[in-house]
Length: 512
Image (cartoon, rainbow, N blue to C red):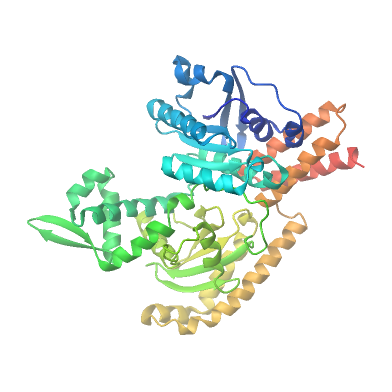
C-alpha cells in the first residue's frame, strides 16, 4: 500500500527545507544557516514504514514552476494525493496568502476532492504576534476551516521546532489514518449527532424520511442516533398522519448549544489553527496523567478523580478561546457519548472499546471498559500509555471490587455521597502514578513522544558537532532522525530506545 504527499507553494517559502529536515534527516541548523538552491521540476522520495506495511511518497514541486503544476495538464500529479502541504512564507501579503490558497483549494476540488490540505504559514519567527493575529483574522474571514482544510503556523527555529515537529507527526498520522487504529470514532459519533441536531434545529420540525434524505447516511446509523437522543431526552418524536416528526426538547437545545461550541471535533482530531508559542509555562503543560471520569454503561457520571481541583476543566479549556460568549465545557457530556458509542459498537459487532483512544492537542483520552463501568483517563498527549496500561487497569478493577456496594447503591439511588471519599484516594493514586511514570522515563525504561522530540533535537545537534569528513557517520545520524519519525508514527517505543542508545554511542565516539 502507498500514499502520496505533495509539497507546493511559492518559490522560497521553505518547502524543500521542511522536506529535508523531516523526511531526510538533514540538520535544521545548517539548512537555516545556508540557503538551498531553488528546486527545479519535482523532487521525490519514498518513506517506508515496514511496521505498518506502508510506503509514503513525498513530492516536492518547484515553486518557480507553479504555473506548470497548477495551470497545465501536469496538474494531474495531484490526482490520488492524500495530503497537499501548501507552504507559504508568513511574511507574504495577505492577498498572496489568500489567492494562492484559493487556487490550491479549487484545484483540489476539481481533481481530488477527498484530499486534505494543510496550509503551513512558515517562518513565524520572522513576524510579530500582531501580524499573526491579523493573518488569523484574514484566514477566518476568507476560509471555513473544515475537515479537509487546516492552517498551521510553523518555524524551524529552535524555540518553535518541537511544535513544528509535532505537527508533522500529526500530519503523517492523518495521511495514514486508514490503516492506523481509529482514534476518531468517538468524534464521528459526536459529529453525526450534531448533524442531526443541527438539521432539526434549522427546520424546527423534520420528518424521519426527510432526515434520511438530507443526511445521506445509512438508515441504521440515523435510527440508532435518534433513539439515543430520544432516550437522553434531547429529541422528541410525534407521529402525525403516519409520519414520525422530530423536534428538539428544551434540554436538547441547551445541551447541544454547549457541544457545538465546546466539543467541536475540529479541536480534537487534527492539529489546531494556531500560532506556536515560544515558551510553555509549567501551568500550561499537562502532567502525564491528569484525571479520570467513572460512569456507568448508560453514560451517567458517578465519580471524577483529578490530580488537583478542576484539573480536567483547566486542561480541556486550553483548547477553547477566551470568549465570554462560550458556555463552559460540561464534562458529563463525555461519558454520554462514550455510552452511545459502546452501544452502537455492539450493534455493529465491533470489538469492545477497551483501549479505544482519542487524542487532542492538549490532552489524550483513553477508555477502559469494565463489565458495569467505563473509565475515561485524561493524560498528556505525548505519553507512552502501553508502558503503564496494566497498572491503570488493575487499579480500577480493584476499586470496583473493593467498593462494589457503594457503586451499586449510587447507581440505584442516584446519591453519590458515599463515593466522594474515593476522590482523595484517587488523587493520591494519580500522584503516585505520575511519579512512577516519570521515574520510568528518567531511568530510560520507556520512551514517549516528548522524549522522542528531545531526542530528535539532540541528534540534530549531534549532526552539527561531528566533523564533516565523517560522511558515513553523518549519513547514519540523518537516518536516525528519519527513524525517529517512523517510530513515533508506528508507536514503536522499543525502537526509540535503540535509537537513543545508538545516538549516545556516536556522541561518545565523536564528541568530547
